[in-house]
Length: 335
Image (cartoon, rainbow, N blue to C red; front, side):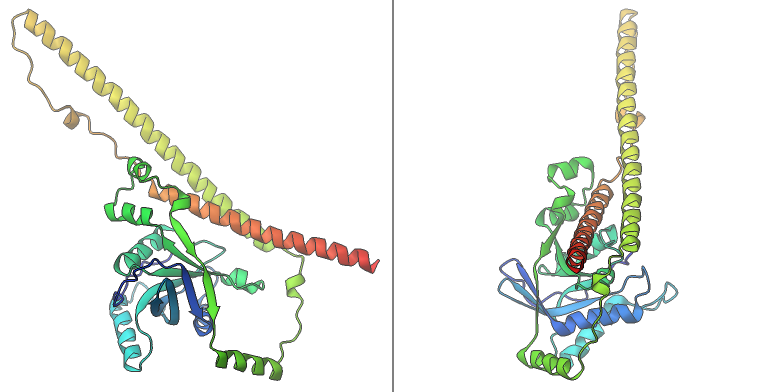
């Protein structure tokens, strides 16, 4: 699970308009990919800081730097201080240094978690225009760059500020997993000089033809995605069992409370008929403490993760079905 990241500093000014588009420099994309290739191993997550500025309703990400890998034994490492020193150094060399979010790699689309929610809330609460970029190296390795930008919805921001994650609180806020994260469109843009350089490099060193993109093998990726999906479905089932147990315990306690009040009333009636004083009133809430309801935010996050897995499987299977139909057409034409 990803560790929680705190923003080092807030942006100088808050955008008057909500962010409707994220524009990323090509160099930033290459830095994120390079960071994962150097430090990401298997399911290990890499993270970093996004720097840039806001222009009207567009968030321009012009630079980034990674968080260094460190273990729990590095007790002296201060993440916030590290970010401050990095941004101070960038400011000294006249490079964009305003904090506008963070990025994180993902493993088979596993990124909807409480850690990501808490981190993005911290960023977005301090810097309103902040986004989180999710980079999927596995999907990228299959031939299509997978980079998506997310923000917390205003409804979820209000719930996180109130810290009321009970079923009643979420119901009052009308929050479902569809209303938790909003995806912001991404545009990758390079300067004209960089585009010219890319064309020149392509002419001088053409990439050898590869046919991996036409491979019909999909069992490994699909098997792993389905396994992760089943694990989350099992977690959801366990969470439902816990909530049903809470409802049964709460209903049982209500019945016990009602029966106690009735017995108390009958006993007082009998004492009054004998001319005896009534029993002193007692605080029933102290005698019958209600069971603590389980937080429902985890259930919403699991639902959101299940939906993400389903969408990934849907996209992957659609692409592979297209390959199969294309291969069948080529085979028929060859015959």
